[in-house]
Length: 284
View 1 (cartoon, rainbow, N blue to C red):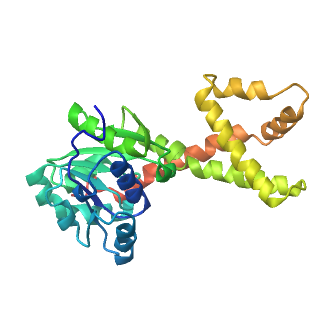
View 2: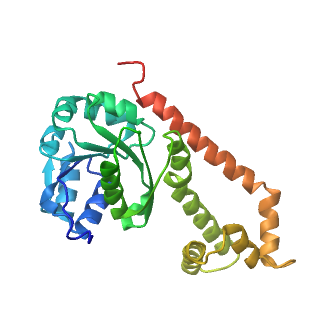
């Protein structure tokens, strides 16, 4: 079915930050009526910013006003604010039974479900920052009680800003957060370091930046489209005794593989800590 002609549900977003704006843009581009979307954000400047981009979206200062009559609620607030945002909505959730999609890192679906009274389908989604330009990748998880239809709807809504995959266990979202959620920052750091190294080798700053960014983009596109796996692609670039081999030897000497593994493990550990810190298991 053409996504532009398929029926769209009424959607409410709790939180009006950049990810909310990206999702709205993706939905509208795929045919969702802007008038069917409501956003709640207590900050007037955020509402004004969204109004400038999407003037037909209904903007609210109160969460209760935004979720009224909405079939889908997207929770787009920071993890530390999520409980306070959703607990007052439990009565509405119990009565209306919306599909709830949370993009808050770390907070377990079971906690969200309890805060909302236990009567709603909850899907967790972990998007990443390239969703802002429609190039994100998101992982989704839902418990076994969530049926195929709400899963399909969640997939459709999240794919409006990029690709989406499902994971089988909620604990795997911690690894997703560490790899793809935080991952863009790792690549931005590498681009930053390549640019600085190029300047140190005598290249003009503008040229250095262009080379670093376009090399990263080209390498990612090749990895995505060539059909070869990353180790094979790396080997194809690496001639014995050549310049690439000299650079990779430095990476090996510095234990880059170990550094990356420890960095991802640290991010995953922090995601687990956030679940304990901002969840309410055992405190209800």
